[in-house]
Image (cartoon, rainbow, N blue to C red):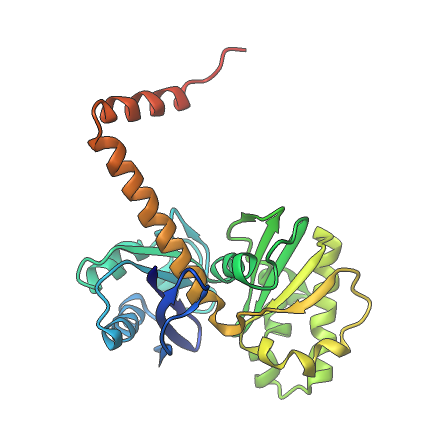
Length: 280
């Protein structure tokens, strides 16, 4: 089964059809630059370019670098234009893509879901935290495989600043830091996150995961195991497609129930029972 995944980042918008049986891209991905300013209309145009490159006409999963609620509405926009805040991204992208079914999810959450299913987190229990180092720092927190969505741990304070302003890969590039110097900043950040959450495993994602050998050996004193993401910078695309497939499956199940004899009444009865408050 194939579903299209798109990963919207601060510097690039990339996407491809995803083979959900293998957890890998079915074709080589297409990437366009994220417009600056990264307004809703500008980013939607970039997404359309990526989709049109493949002539895709089916469901689409998209990541967004900020808090996303209900698979639709953007609540924060730290590394894109503030005009995104309170935008119904699902409606925007669906309209721009000619009515295609769209699911939107936080970018790090998507990467985390993919890594837990197909990558470095597969089969791991306890507390697992994936951190994506890119334009900012994204986070996905799992407890026994269950996602706690929209954690945005890149905005924890570190030395009086948002952690991502000090320890993102963009900070490394902008400040021309050596790998060793940058690793010390990452180490301080990981120590802070570890103090708060006591994870069993850190998974380091984002494009920088391809060069894990250059900085992970310099990180010392962290009790949790630290590993690079196995899906590397494709994790967001795969996770976005996985979420879109889940949305489509849920919609198909609801439609099937409604179409069955007495289905509408059963669905209404179920909803009614779920909304009742048990007596004390």
